[in-house]
Length: 215
Ligand code: SF4
Image (cartoon, rainbow, N blue to C red):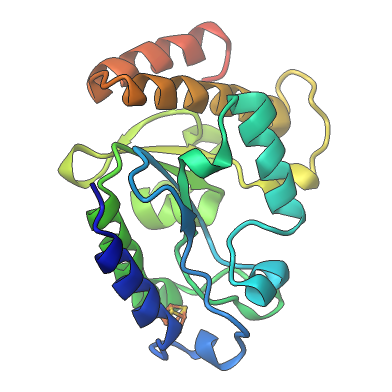
């Protein structure tokens, strides 16, 4: 079980952090939110304008689509999982955070993950995938599992903002692959909540993804 005091301590540290230049233009820090005992954590790259205004992750247009992806594709409640980003302050004009900024901020994500102890990390988009796995091509790497520390698996999928620019749901499109990924994530959450072994889940989900043409 995550220690709520420790999680609040991390949040307070983020709030006053001035370790990189992103603090100069932020209105609010965006530490992340959700179930701190979730067995799956979602990690995006950084907050956008709506998130910077509200202090909450994934509340803008991309966040609205993510809500649909949770509810209709994965068949899960967003409150079941924890969701955060690599950097906790908005990069100006929504640019991709620099390596220096991600390296400055990464220890907060690590501290959150040490508390939450997820079994699986879902990376949203290529920036967080690259940061955590060193993989560079999301079209090749999504929908598959990668080993991280302490037996934790990483499962990359597309960022919802990329899907907003690619609205087709036809077979073979990013949205179609994303739908398969989210359906798989729904299966993973149910299995993890039933205390199934993560290696068995990886095997079962990989088979489902292969059989459905997802990988
Ligand atoms: S992005 Fe992270 S490291 Fe940079 S100021 Fe914000 S909290 Fe600190």
